Length: 316
Image 1: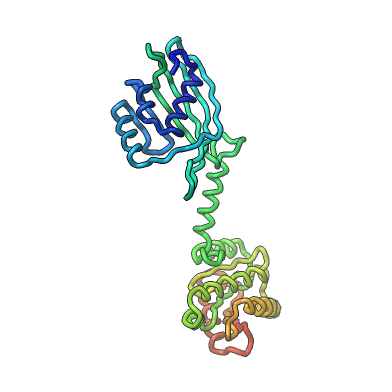
Image 2: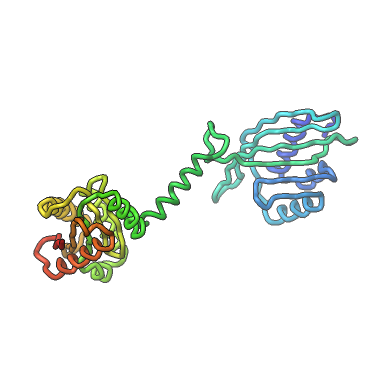
């Protein structure tokens, strides 16, 4: 190598030797005794020459592959008469005939020192750009917000059906009741659900739960609450529904929708549901009281089943 080669061309030569030719012996000739390196991995920190040599020996034994440099750019800043800083970016792809190809783009800064024999590498710092950070952000706020939103959603919702889980349904319903909202409180149970799991298997049982949950979502209003509070147990709070006649209309819609969705489940027998209903009223507006009365009404519905898909009873 020419002694007076430019800093840019020297770094280009180093990356080609390392990535494409895997010439560890050649690279070692251009390493300063003061070398330190920070790589792209959390563990890739070599603070001195001894750590660098150990890392190179380990890498040469464990991985014999090579990369193809697809694109690259370099920019040099002279720090002094004897030192230069080269920054740049490399797009590389693993050179392999089969298997998964590793494709990456990384940035680097290299500090070079002029010696009698030419350039020596004093420091290398590599980094990979965070793909989650938008071009107009100085910190990946959007990614953090998305992650936070997803965590909150997971804490509040049932993972299988997407309905509110038991705890969040209770918390939200109590807020409605504290605000003075009136309405109908429902406890729902899928009849003979254990038989579905036993006869068709648990995947079929999960499909049934998901399908019924979608049916509930399709017939309730946007301000209503729907939760899965147990294996095959569901709760609803329907604000503004305060009369038995309104519930009859609601159950007609649910009966129709649930009947249509069952055709896709391909069960030999219709899957019916039992529902217990109670209404908020003066002295009957605490969550515990509503839950208890709806549960009692559910027991009556299971006892007094009719021929339809939806069996319901109400208790004031």
